[in-house]
Image (tube, rainbow over all chains, first blue to last red; front, side):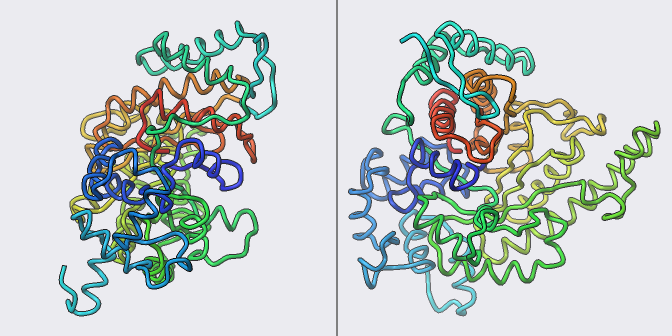
Length: 118
Length: 348
């Protein structure tokens, strides 16, 4: 765990070997690792199947920008996509898309008294 | 090609001949084999490492398709450390939107579970707001840090004072007492944070105070796993082997002192972790090729034993990264590529 200080190391690791976070599908694959304990290959295949893209598309920011826009699961440049899902809104959609529970999404539902259904 | 530019473990530039580079790679993997009783890197893997270090480019990367997940221990702390004046929620947004982070971590500047306990309500309030505003997975991170439980700052006698006096049994008893306090604090803070909606807890720098530190973490993980079956739990280590400060502590019948990453991961899995982070120390007297060959050998053996994702620690001073405040990108990118592609890691 951990790629170090931003200026010294995190940027270098991100460019050298990282998936790219919300620029691509890194956050989605990361979710499958953290909460499901999936190893990288299984996590990538799972996310690709749910997004209906190839595994190689997952790290292509051009493809993934369009996919994220179409599925409305959170964009990096929010000002270029007004009205798009942000923060917890995007996590509701990600939970449904990946067929998984997200802890803060469940908490949000509880806090609004179960108005929203899964 | 006659000469190769590489770095020493302290970050200084060094010029190696092809023969010296090959020797450093072979000796680096050999050192890990001898200490860890694990398989040596193959000729193909050593050749791959040789290519990584002999490429003249300043920066190298993994091949397309080999990208992995990055996690960020003490993320909000690191923005504060460099004097950038942001709220912690803004720091997380910087990681999410500007740094390409796959996951983030919320943490307190003291970065240990014990000092977080009395201010946990303040931490929860900020975490709950942060979760409304961010999209990527979020951990809460802190260190088990059993050193915070010794007098005069904590309730227990200090084993480091007792041991030089020859009071071995008293030192051991103090560490066993520290374990109980630490487990309570980690379970309490971990529970509070998870109930605020976080995706997971990161036990960072586990084992820093030795085998008692590792035992306390495993027991906290076990309790949290039973309490929250869907909780993400990452165990990141402090060093490549568990120091036997107590010497007699066991978990599930396994003696903890002296365990290397391929044995540590087995216990982390048994306790209920979903991600494991091995830490392989950098030797400043050796070259980065030596250190990376050694780190890859340990990490590969760990990855092969693991059924859960392995995110090796690759910050300053571990994983073949030089021990220097601003590690050069030539050294970092080579260590990054080697660890991901040869050790077959799931993340860093």
